Length: 190
Figure 1 (cartoon, rainbow, N blue to C red):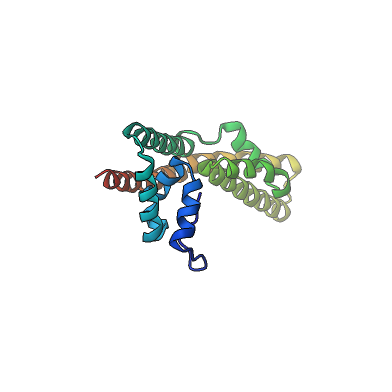
Figure 2 (figure 1 turned 90 degrees about the vertical axis):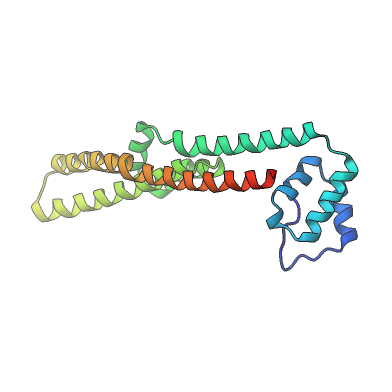
């Protein structure tokens, strides 16, 4: 990406022209597409550079198709691609951060927001149920088998709550985000 609007970055029109001359057509289209992240001067110079390159309608359509594909991929990763049952169990029972950090970092790096939130949810609930089970065991003198059973059974309400409330809440947030993004994109087309 190129130089977004920032109070510390001041470029002259000549510097912008030199910089934008080196950019690919796709990068220039991204500047125009995300015009609210750039100064009016930066956008106008990007438009002038695009005009001088005589960008075809096919190039613009290809860019739009790639942007739509990005949105579709984002939605797929955050609505239909949630943690599978084995992964949910992994984070519930192996909640210790040093052990599951690598998994969560992979989700973060790959922009799997729903999976990351679910992993954090199951780790937190697993930890809380583990501590609660320990406290109950100390108070009521439960043996290890009963304590372990309580911890295992605690996964069931955590799973049901996640499926019924957490996931639906996430999906609704993403739908709102997608609807506003879709409306913005339609406005850009006009």
